[in-house]
Image (cartoon, rainbow, N blue to C red; front, side, top):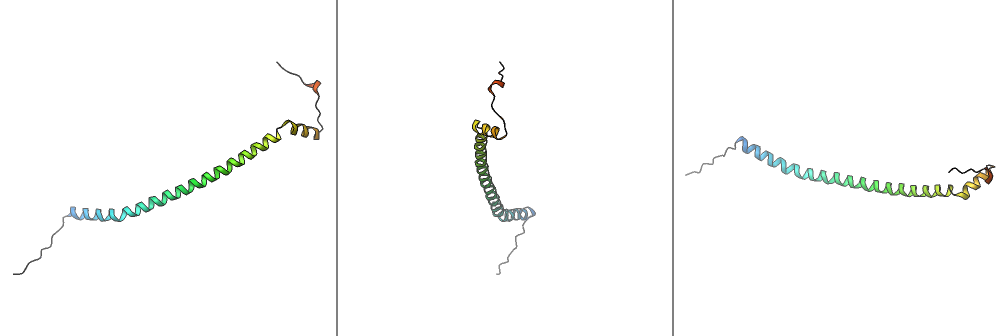
Length: 96
C-alpha cells in the first residue's frame, strides 16, 4: 500500500497569523536599532548643550567680574579725572 500525502490547507486566519508573526519578527530588531540610535543622538545633543552651557557660564562670570572692576569707585574717579570732572563736596545735597 502506498501512503497518500495530503496537503493541509491553511485558512485565511492562519495565513494572516503567520504573516503577522513573520512581520513582527522582522520589524522588532529594526525598531530596537532605530530607537537605540535615536537615544544615542539625543544623548550626544544633551552633552553638547551641557558643554555650551558651561562655556557660557564661564563667559558670564568673567563679564560679571569685568563689570565689578569697571564699577569700582577708584575706576569711576579715574575716568572722571580724565574727562575733566572734579569732586566738589559743597555741591552735594542730601534728600531725606
